[in-house]
Length: 254
Image (cartoon, rainbow, N blue to C red):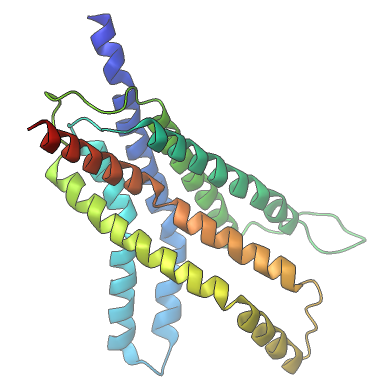
């Protein structure tokens, strides 16, 4: 009896981690999404209706990952996750952790007033709150990916319950969204030289040399952002790929 209960503990950990990730992600996106909506509504060249349409599309796209987390929390079926997928999840958790830790010193340094004579901390801003909530969301994502690693075995038994229909649908939607994000990141990275020199030219036009913004630092920041964006979709990929392998196994057994 105890062995049967212990077999289900990792799955319960995944469900709890998914709920935490859902809440943390929503909190982390609240301020950036509000800022985005304000910026879009401030644009005059696309009109109010155009701005609202863009906001709705972006909000719907952004909601995919939190909805996937919620469906994962509500799922009562087994999660077939192979050994390779578990290691992929753990690797993604490590990558997100490294990127999150690497961003902390710069954020802490920004809290200090840039003054040689006075080392007092500057006032806390809403952007600092957004950064903190984003860090918490990253930690929640790491917790979820780490919980996948604890799932035992290369898949469920033949009598195991299948994942819920809601999770299957949202997993496929999340995979499509992840593919779009990945393509966008590749295009964005390819355009890095043009973007960098365009920013430099604009800075010189307004009389700002912006010497601290070197090409390699700018490129590294964009690479970090791209890797972080793609890593968010590792959890849906693990669930999707594991489900595909389980369906293929059932078909071959039949």
